[in-house]
Image (cartoon, rainbow, N blue to C red; front, side, top):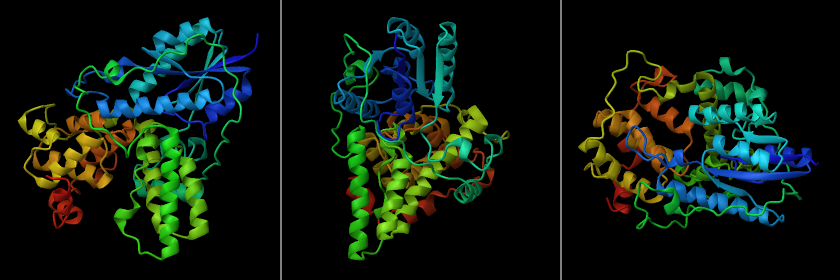
Amino acid sequence: MGKKILVWFRNDLRLHDNEMLVEAIAKSDEILPVFFFDPRQFEITRYQTIKTGAIRARFLLESVADLRSSFKKFGGDILIQLGKPEDLLPTLVSTYEITEVYHHREVASEETAVSTQVEDLLWKLRVNLRHFIGHTLYNKEDLPFPIKDIPDVFAQFKKKTERDAIVKPCFVTPTYINFVEVEHWGDLPSLTDLVVNEDVKNLATSEEFVGGETVALKRLDEFLNAGETIALSNTSLKKTEVISKLSPWLALGCLSPREVYWKMKEAEANYGLKPYFNQIVVGLLWRDYYRFMFKKHGNTFFKPAGFKNDAKINTHQDNELMKAWKAGNTGQPLVDAVMHELNTTGYINNTSRLLVATYLIYQLKLSWVVGAAYLEEKLIDYAPASNWGNWATVAGVGNDLRLTGSFDFEKQLKNFDPKGVYAQALGA
């Protein structure tokens, strides 16, 4: 019997720069790609939000569908399963005579707990669960310090990492794949199958944000081409021009951070434009930083008191003020404009996120964890470490306590939209 490896896809929905996939192809005679739509990801949370809202769910469905299309070009497919991985994987391993299971390790507690359960169940079947790390720009083994000694201050982390660590080259995209024979690969669920706690009838369509590796690579090329155009025309750079909006595809792993990094380094070498690309690289470093902080500190980022034992804790209220903030009906034009954009598109830039978080925490005096949970529901680029890490920082309970009290709403208003143009453009 040939060696068969089950490749469990999670937030790594791509063929390019995918070490897990490359290794599985190299070490097996056949692979069985699998994706699980876990119903727990679409439930109501303790903060009365939906864990994965309709816009996020649609982006996920599009991304899985695109990966399925890519596998079909190789003569195979990806097995679609609706249910909990720990319930379904042992049966799949037995049914298809799997000899090993590969997956990417996550850092948040819920995802880690699922991996642990799966590993224990597979161990009883004498099947190994092999872990890969493919979400960060830097691999943890390439950092100039062990996880326990990573600086809590981002500036120190950035300085030491950029000076002493290396970004590894990308893994080559597979040119052939041999698949396990499967009679029925499973149907992709509809949005209404997944989203049972939200009305999806009037969900706005999006031409700008469509999930999947195909669109992700196209968007990266467009961003790089825009940089080339600026370089050739000697156009001066404005800060707002540097927003790449690549984060949704990075969050689901449709786009590799190393692919972004090396493509930008190549363009930088050809055309200059270091300031143009530098903000994107810093953004990738922030993603790494928060993932490594979660690895170092665990669940502290999810606790209302965070790292500050004497923090004043607001209750997990969903009162009228909170409802108005969520709906974009606070009466503050810019905040309302940003929230309408979030609710319609599933995306707002980082400056907007800081603005609405600062308003919720310091103007409305409401619970930051409920705000973080609401953005978890809505953001198509949601990643646990970045979202909860950023919110804890704004609330003054993050791991870098020197930032406590550094978020001033009035100052943010003046810097963000001094003439009210943004709010007017969005019809607030």
